[in-house]
Every structure is written in structure tokens, then in C-alpha cells.
Length: 332
Image 1 (cartoon, helix red, strand yellow):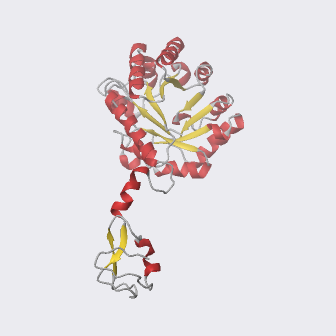
Image 2 (image 1 turned 135 degrees about the horizontal axis):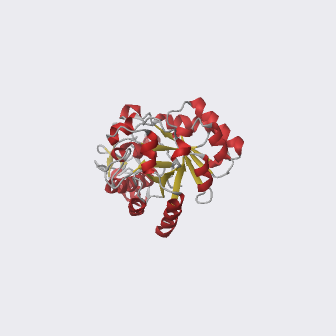
């Protein structure tokens, strides 16, 4: 099964639907599987005096309330209907993460996969609300403990979502994430602890970590992207630019090919090389008919035919039926 790659547009449209469409075009060009946005009504999401996260203030260079920042980035439900239609036209899967129940209800008819952000991991009523939809769910686990992830899983399952329809994403909720806080091995811990498919939502700079996650068994990769890292907004600086997104996708697909099926057997391209590089048993010195084969009169060399060196032990102690000169192939 191919790794499911989500290009996270998030709020990098800066509240402009035309920019959002350009982001969709970039995602299509990069050949990702889905492009994802975030849907909310600001007054239902935050209080008017809620502060920005430190990274948001640092990345925007503007000190304002979280309410004011989000209100500028908010798109209308009609905008999202238009974006869904545009995604259908461009033949790419539309996704959007709801940040409160009203928006979840709105999105229920637009998508079969619900991505739940890390901020909702401990939001029990919200998890119950989405769990009752009985959709496929991708749940980010940033900032979470193993116990909190267990509780969130239980809540979703009890609400009506089948366990096999849930994928857990390891994540570190910091933009950008320092390399020493990625803790990618935690993705394996999630898989082994809960016996579910896992993936990785990346907030590091560059593409090394999502590539490593694929090599470690991630089934889903989510990565922020933007038209330009120099644009104003909270997430642009920790996002990939279009050419980087394309390289990430190409590299992931190559890694998938390189991982193969896990069977240890010769590959087609190797078969012709066996005769060239594997060694056969030959005479190390002159051997007369009737002599016994020993480690003193035999050795192994590349010849291209003859008795394989894997039969060395079986050949020792046998009697030669022929006279042999140096480098002659052993015959039985």
C-alpha cells in the first residue's frame, strides 16, 4: 500500500481563496494524495483575549490576540465548498481539519477522512462528536502522552469509529520542530502499543525527517507547504516551498520502491552477476588422479562456472578422478 501524502495548506492561504486555489495547484503538480486546509469559526474556537502561541508571534512579528489572527485567516463555509469543487476538478482529494463541532458538521458531507489536529487530542466532547460520524480518522498526537493517546482512541472507538479506521500520527507541536525534539522512534511506540497504522506529521525544516519516517514504516505523511516562506503568516516559515514539496514526494516514492516486499531473494538484475562474482572451487596446485582434495591443494576463485564454493566442505576428503593443473575447475 502506497504512503498517503497530505500536503498541509493549513492557513497558508492567508484568508484568500484565490491563494488557496494556487496552493491546490501546487499540490497537484507535486502529485500528493490530498491537500488539506483548516476550517473554523473564530468565535466558536477561541475567546477574544486568547493569546497567540509563541511561535505564532515569532513567525508573524505581530503581537495580537489569537482571535484577531485567526479571524484574518478564516475562510467561509461557501469558500470551502468552492475549494472542494476545485479539488474535484483538479482530481485531488480535498481534506480540511475542523477545529470546532459546527465546522465538523459542515465538513461531514464534504469528506470521508477526518484529520484531527493535536490540539484536540484531549478534547473528549469533540472526539466523541467526530467519532460518531463513523468516518476514517487520522489523529495527530503532538503534545500527548501514551495515556492521553490511549484515552483518545478509546473515546473515538466508543463513539462509533472502528479501530481499524483510525491512523495515529506522531508529531511534535512546534513550528519549526528542533531535530532533537522529533523523537521519531515514538511513532513505532504508538504502532506497537495500540496495534494501529501510524504515520508522521512533520514540522521540521526540510524533508529529511518525513523521508526517515517512511523508511521506518509510516503509512501517512503530512507536511506543511506554502507558495513562499517569505509570505506573512504563522506557518509559512516552517513550510516547504513548491519545488521542495515536489522533491519530498519524489523521494518518498523512491523510498517506497527501495523498501520492496521484504523477501530475501535474488533480484532480477542480480541473476546475471552470480556467475561473474561468485567463486568456484579450483586447483591450487597440480593434482594427480587419485589424490585427495584438501585445503592445501584447493582454493576458490571467480571462474564463471564449475562447482560452487558453497560446497567446499563436501568436496574436501573426496578423491580426484582426473589430473588437474593450477586453476583447473574441480570435477566430480
